[in-house]
Image (cartoon, rainbow, N blue to C red; front, side, top):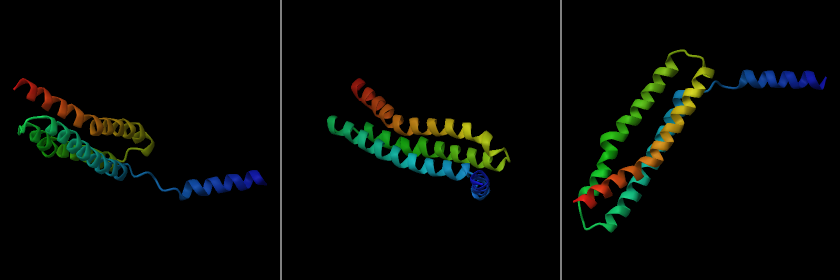
Length: 126
């Protein structure tokens, strides 16, 4: 009897569970990644500004956010809109989602340091 109750409760839970909305989940992660990227970019670049002699070059690193990162993130969102509307089985989208998610967060956290490193390299050459 306990087994029958367990099976019926798990079957009901699976039926009542909503399907994963990959498009919405990726959109949420893109928004959070943009916030993290922006905060790190400002924090790291301002740290570089304090150590330099008033050059305008580090401000170009902040402009990079508007010029390259936001359109790039929008492309990721559009990709997931197309994938979600393609009718592909949700189970097949999970590995793609995890790969894109890892790439998104590596870029969101690593790119501010790379950009600031490039700016510091340019400043050292000037």
